[in-house]
Image 1 (tube, rainbow, N blue to C red):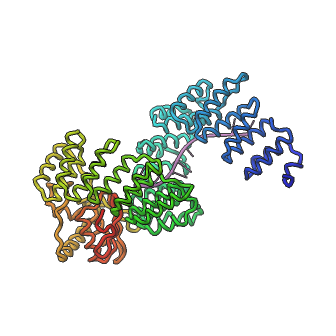
Image 2: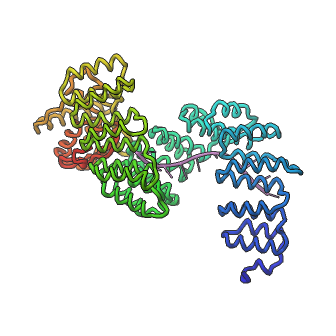
Image 3: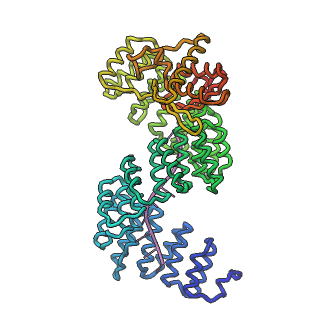
Length: 614
DNA sequence: ATAGGGTTAG
């Protein structure tokens, strides 16, 4: 203590106050605090205010509160800043309590516009409305900061009508106000209204660009996200860490590896430091773009890995069918004392088991959720188990699990079960399930499609016809297949059977050539699973134009011989396409990587990394 | 002396 300068040098409140503001460590702060007490400044309002803020900045709310409780008659500055500390720590109830204490003191302390700004930050609708009343009562509702805070509360909480009304009636608005309003729309899925306001802005900072790009990424509009990002770059607005996280997510969704790599090198070249957010986004991007090696590299180098980073890597291994590796990362994570598995970890690890048919390991992990980790399995975890059991052929067990679980089964889980019935050609069980669904009014479009697929798979064309009629009667449509491929930093999309791409003529010529090769190999199209265009073309013809085949044909004509072709598909790959792609990889000596809705397939020399189990 | 908007995994 004696070695520090604070014991001997004389101090004025002003010099102490400025020392507090510049202090870099909590120990340093304690010494200054001690010096302040020794000099008899412990009741000095400015000193105490600064001390409180400083403790708060070191995340020592406990010290802040002690100090506050020892202070007689705190003034509005002290009240406001302690309220701010509380709300920043998500302690809004305590914040409101302090506000009430403040206005009901014997000697009332009048709140000001700053007090209301702090009260509103991050608060929920019930408190927001309460604070709103007090804002009006104290006459601060025309203050821009306060009004922005109100807009923010209503829009974050989804009361977009109230938010918009307050917004429209504002005397003036700042970038922050607009961003709050845009965020409200964006977070609740109204991307059009968000974009409309965004386009009307006369000045934009990086935060509002981030909100808009992030909204596109969140609502799975990766092309819009990337387009807007390019626009941001073109107006010389510098992207920051938050921008890049959103853009990387978009790259992952669309499988744009070249763009993703470009972002990674942009980080290096522009001094954007790696951190756990960016690292996780990179792991996600690389794995969804088929480059598991790069995902591993980022993961291994990443410091301070949190559970989100671990989950991203577990999911990456699961998607690529590397079940053992996923299990290793999972157990490493469980061994760390800083990370505990979450519900997402279990979705990842159970999917990893499903992709390799690790039934008993999966069952063990599923049981451990509740027993060992105190996590109640959700419908998604049950879905993973139904998938694991069903794919492995334990259809009865899967069915029993759905019937006995204490959550209401949803259409997804029934779909998973029916999918497994199709895979194992179990018409009897499938019909039992469908009858159950119809009897209980649970059948939906998916039910008909799945049963129809099953009839097709077992060559029961009468059954297919019956389903076809039922679907027509119910106006059921199948989600069109869509595949994309990135060539020279540009993403090309193909929808099943479409002719929209500028190079369509060449693509279809290539497809004819491929069909010739396949015929020479003695391949005949399998009469599987095609419903979206039934009745228009004969089955064999429609099989030829599944979207991934168009994308692969485009890849063959637009990339260098021998290079890898990478495709992203929105649906699960069908049996026929899977067989055909295996053959194409053999004939053309190309490595073909297909990411379908569930996982990766790496086709090489006539076989697939999923070992035909998917 | 003090305030308002943005981030990752299925």
